[in-house]
Image (cartoon, rainbow, N blue to C red; front, side):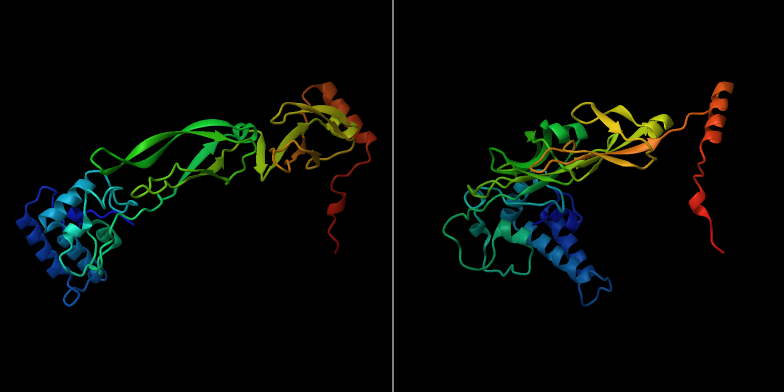
Length: 313
């Protein structure tokens, strides 16, 4: 459920006296009454104003609400009642036979609603939390540990929940793929009235790498080679995340040729592969001798790279 700032809804300051609150309510109730207002959200605003006034007009309700509000909650933020609300804060003390069924879950969680009382506080599990963690490709490959900070609800000695950052040490397993979720049991929001805490779900975001592209568990690497290596074949050194390896380039390859290094991708039950995409780079003929060699090669090779581009009439 969402936290509601009743003072903001009525447009008054938290230190406003009861007369100011009453005047603000009457003014807004007239403005948003569905029978006279032409605004599209008049009915919704009218209900919000009525709920806010119901919470603040009674000194006991207002005192209890102020204590919860002091925890630093912001409007619209996900909210759970204090774990001891059914004990130190007794919802039954606020029930006066009125029907609050038209009010929000937030209001009902604080002040109860018309109907039979429970004999004791209800236990419930804490809410799960979700966060996103960015890792570099080397960490995704090898694993590691990371200290992260997440906002959690912490209940102070006064029983009032407050939002504050909490530092958590996370062990990252090897072979993390982009978008994978890690579940940290018991690291979510605290439970209600002694209920178990929720879990924290971390979504992995693998950051771009200057050499490799990640596709699932497979890695793609663009590898520059010289024209003579492409023509004659060669044994070249290829970088991988586990270190350099030697790879044989067959003779007569062209740019775009893909070679596979099996099992050199991200580890896992089925390890990924590394695909090496060859890119032939042609050096410029700078000296006279280099130009002569290119000219000799052109004479020796009966090769037309555009032979297949003829358009039939």
